[in-house]
Image 1: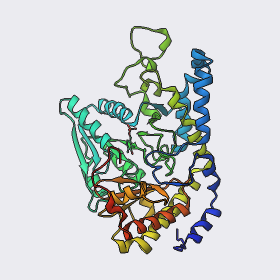
Image 2 (image 1 turned 90 degrees about the vertical axis):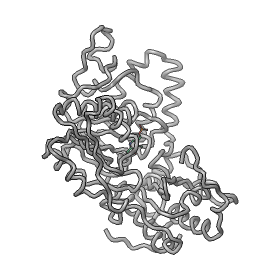
Image 3 (image 1 turned 60 degrees about the horizontal axis):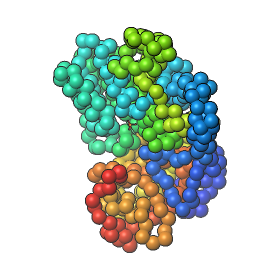
Image 4 (image 1 turned 120 degrees about the vertical axis):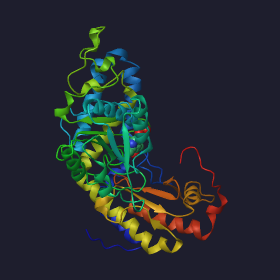
Length: 427
Ligand SMILES: *Cc1c(COP(=O)(O)O)cnc(C)c1O
């Protein structure tokens, strides 16, 4: 794709006018005085979701009480799973919505290691989300150190060295576990190539789709993916702590056992039998009562993504990211900014990392302007990264243009120097 861009606000506004997804922005709760560029961490609130939670609270719970279990609630983890399946290219009954990403990862990694009886190696990379690596370390601890954890490296801090990754996947490898899009640099794997390579060596592959779901096309069935997890509160806009999802390839399900045997994963929970018998399908990976009010926040977010269409979303995401990188080159390089994400959009998800020595304080000045200028919310990642999250359902070209102008202002007038370098609890 080759774009013709101009570094002017008129150009940015013109792009918004011709954008086929522009109408979706009006479906979100938006305060026009804030530019929000953190949809890769917590998506915006869709107006319809606020109504759905209100209805579930006052009507389904308030009035219908326990009867709502049979009317609306009981099958939500499977039904929402089937809807998310359409976004990630999975089949019906391969996806379940439950717990958080971290807990789902634990359940799948544990099950995978039990299935791969004779193999002890788990391969990941240094770009993976820390929680994913903590889960591996915890499981190693529980299995009395029998598991060997090996991490692929990066030469430049932006791309994973896939030759190094492949060299670490051997015949003793039980599982390869990677972020589809890495949270810092936005590096996007060629998932098909890695999956095939690992499977030839007899390893299973688990993709963490958290930073990719709803913004990068994913086709789990087409690449014959074994396992996946992902969260719903980022580009799926399902709200803080909304439950996550897990995917298990159909043909693997009969061999996989959840390490958490709870009544919701029982073949017949309401028999209250004293002996555990796992449900047949993916449902056995449920544990206890699902958080219904949080599940209520997922449906609209997923429906909007399906209605917008993944290819439209990806096209806009690439165009906006390329526009930001164009402005970086045209305007920010001379203030010592550099690109902390892959140059090639085929290797990049939907956030762009900008590197600057003063990244933390510039970020603070964007979020808390001392005068009446616009408030801009990106986020900061150690040690020197400002992440700009592009959420095509609501991010505008004009917001990207304004953000670059505001960064220049903060540097030129020295505004960032008024802030401390001491980090907040959540950055
Ligand atoms: C956001 C994210 C998570 C979050 O895990 P939770 O358990 O839902 O807090 C996990 N993995 C990756 C790759 C993420 O980007």
